[in-house]
Image 1 (cartoon, rainbow, N blue to C red):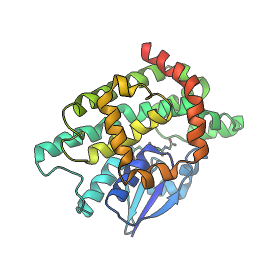
Image 2 (cartoon, rainbow, N blue to C red):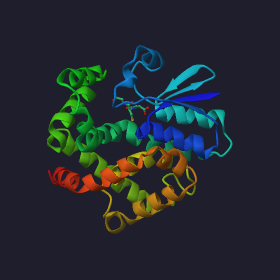
Image 3 (cartoon, rainbow, N blue to C red):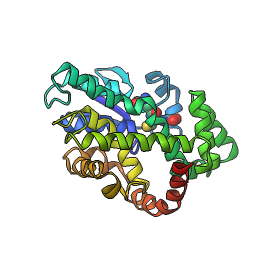
Image 4 (cartoon, protein in one colour):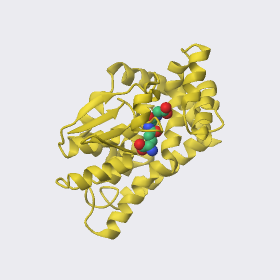
Length: 263
Ligand SMILES: N[C@@H](CCC(=O)N[C@@H](CS)C(=O)NCC(=O)O)C(=O)O
């Protein structure tokens, strides 16, 4: 039996839910509200000392890090393969899987906090907010969160985050000009790994010009959303009011995003 500790909008949890849905694997969920700080309980810290979702528990044994969880799922459930057979092609696929882990994930956290989560954190009392921010184990991430909460798009980390994101989106568009999926002819863990990060900036309203500026990326994202795993892994977990609110916020956030892009 597989148990997944996850959160509805967490990009890393989406990565794992996409694979579970693609492979049609049964799982039981444990919902951790990471904006309310539920990841900091001692029980959850025993599963993941970094206090982050997702954690997959397979036959009582916890596995953390979404990239590694997805590799585990691929090894344990090789039916509906999501990796190329050829070792070189597989290495190329894994390069795409490293893109979030090498920086886009932190950039995504900057943008998400600056555009959305900060508004929930700012509703906390001063003491609650300090506790929430101080609970983050990684000192670098702690400072980035603090800046995004207090300063929004004026955070000194946001310009670099936007530029890193823009480069990744350009790289994807360039690749997708040559192959239908990121690692070649087939949908793989590479596409899974980038889907939630593209979805996040699209939800924040920063992708409306992609059909003109990044047509191959836009086409890929249309195909990604049309796949059978998208609805159960992504859309079913997004409250309608959140989707609507993000669309409305898009205009004001877009100014911040464009300013950061030009900085
Ligand atoms: N590298 C980790 C990152 C996990 C991560 O940052 N998870 C976020 C949600 S996407 C989280 O739980 N954040 C809690 C927090 O920042 O306190 C992975 O890929 O699983």
